[in-house]
Length: 175
Image 1 (cartoon, rainbow, N blue to C red):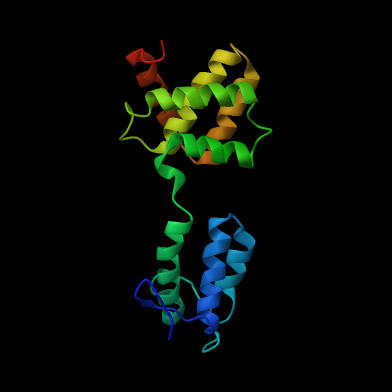
Image 2 (cartoon, rainbow, N blue to C red; image 1 turned 120 degrees about the vertical axis):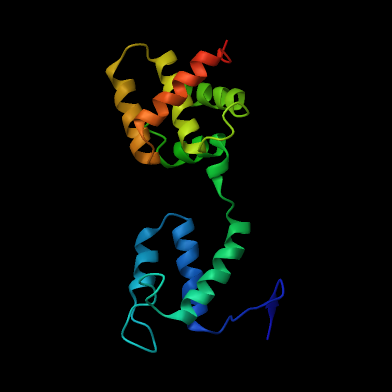
């Protein structure tokens, strides 16, 4: 039996293949495919492959755990770097953020990253975008609407972002 990093690799097992499909689809943002895999009826029982931590097919969950571990090396988590979060946001929703704002936000993220190391990267990314929006689009309603949409897309609280913005402005690191 072939091995991958000392763990058994099951290329001919249907459940292993489905676990790989699920992980790749979920990492690439294809929720429809990932949802279809998890709701497919299991080969052994009529219950879906993955319902919760307690219910579902234990063999599929075991394969899923192995595939997710190795997928973390292939698809590193961008949640630790605000610049990576900004890049991902722009690639997904490029029309939402003007290029001038994006460039300024990247500069700001590089400056404030060491100061805000304990904060979530998504919150820091939204905060530097808010500062860049306020610098470029002074006192305009479109900048406020873009900020609210960015917070919604990133799943961060506007209040938390405003607190980080306040901390950045008070630190005078931007000058």
